[in-house]
Amino acid sequence: MAFEQLKAGIALILEEIEKRPGDRHVLQEELRAKIAEFRALGLSVPEDIVRLEEQLGKDDSDDLYDNMPV
Image: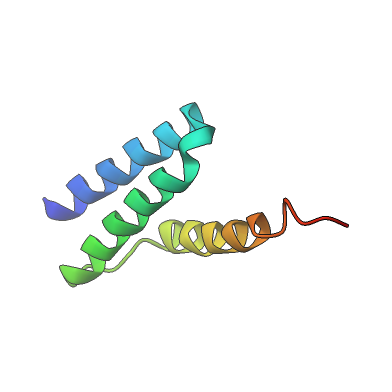
């Protein structure tokens, strides 16, 4: 049951990221917290969620340079 609840929570967060891209960073932190819950409960994180987490990390590092003068 916990596994399905966590997956549903992640799905809701992803929907919110899509609806509110301006709040993406806050919602990404919520997503990372949900992923941490999976791990804390000893549940294996679904592969698609692992890939998403990796992609978010890459996106965050790209954002560091968005406002750099060239």
